[in-house]
Amino acid sequence: MLEVKARLLHRAVFIPEEPINCELIITNVDKSCQVSENNSYFSTSLLNSLETFGKSKQNDFKSNDHCATIAWGSAQIYCQCDINDKKVKIPVLFQKNFKNSQTSFKPILGKRSHCLYSSEAKIVFCELQLKKNESKTFMYSQSLPLSLPPSYSGQYLKISYKVSIGIGGINQPLCIINLPFKLFEMKCIYKALKTRFQNHLSDGIAKNQVNEKTKNPFQEDDTDRESSLEISMDLLTNITTTKNLNTYNIQSANGIVGKFCLSKVYYRLGEDVLGMFEFSKSSIPCIKYTVCLQFEESISKECLANESVSNLIHYTTVSQHTECVKMAAKTSFALPIPITCTSQFTHKIVSVNWRLHFEFIIEKTSNEDSSNENTFHKNSSIIYVETMLWNLPVHVVSTNPIQASLMMQSESSETIYIE
Image (cartoon, rainbow, N blue to C red; front, side, top):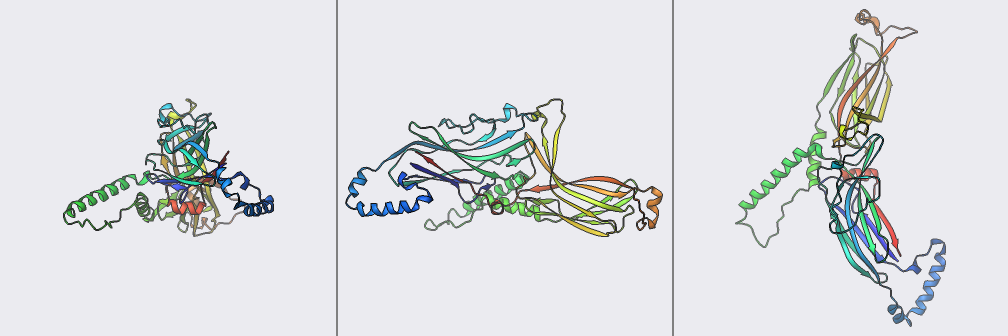
């Protein structure tokens, strides 16, 4: 019996252009050792009896060792898209064919899902022979391009990524191991990332040209090169830590309701959106307000299943805050952004944007009442109110994949047995 263990190294959250490393361990285990925990006493007594008998029959056991053979093993990464067929359709131009010229390995064949991307299938091993209790380890590494959409689960479609490993035995059906992982989006810093790479490359070339004649051939090059993850996180930190106080006047048709302050407009996944209201100088009393953090899922026109529909938009609320502020002068709120959500992105099929949705319950007064100073302190058994809506766009970007993997406690591993 063959035991196949596959796992993603380090974590299960990645960014584009970062190497995704997978470890594959194949062991030829003995069937007699595969006993349940209930029979542990029987297995230990059996092993003890075999030890006393083993020395005299050692040569016999070696001659009966079974050698298992596996024909081939292949691995590749593919992007799978599941859609609501009644609402969304994916044109053939948006779908990608599998780059499997070397093998006939097609992990998504026969499924209703659509393939948006597939890496080239790599042969991990071929004609592998293992003796009893022998184990061998193989490594698979692949990086993804920057143009791919992030992992996303919405109302109309779902985008997921998997490392698919196929193992083909002799006269046996194909065994497939799928290791899911999460991909973050980094297009928001693509221009800055590209400029940073070009500057880093030009500086390295200039330095090599200057030091080419004076370089010591017996000394190792100790120059540290920044990885794509380090450069991306550096630029992402610069974007999200820049604070620019934005003040908005909330005004209805009859007067000023209040003032709203927001410290910044770029937030990471896992952060809190902090906002502050000021009602001390308002002419229209605000009785209650509700603020919701929502992301907007918009399907492109080319992917609409019903041609009569002009657009297909859905709003999903991830956090909400409600407060009564009848006599309040100042108040604040904090809306957490779940680490499991998806940052803003734009793709040929779908685009996701974020916003703050406000609902204000204000007193319904006329222009004459709003000019009276005693209107704010007027007490009455009946209050006529009206609702005022306001939407404020915000930017939600990705976060550090190492930190996100620790917060989500995500691991990707699987073990199968082949007889």
